[in-house]
Length: 68
Image (cartoon, rainbow, N blue to C red):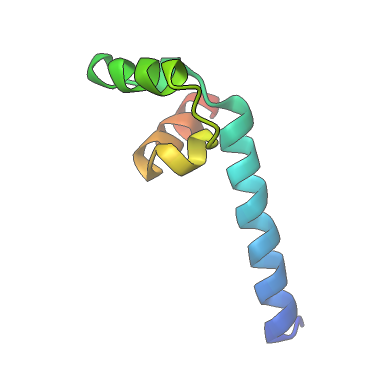
C-alpha cells in the first residue's frame, strides 16, 4: 500500500502527463467553428502559452473521445 505522500506524487505525475498529452496532440480539429476564430487570433498573436493553458476541460474531453 502506498503512503499518502506517494499517492499524491503519483497523482501529480499522472496529471502532468495528461497535460503533456493534451499539449502535444491538440489540434484545431477539436474546435467547433465558433472556436476556430479564437485559435487563429492566438496563433496570430504568437501566443507562447500551451493549449492546456488556453483551452478548458471540454476540449480535453473532446481529445480523449476522439482518441478512444
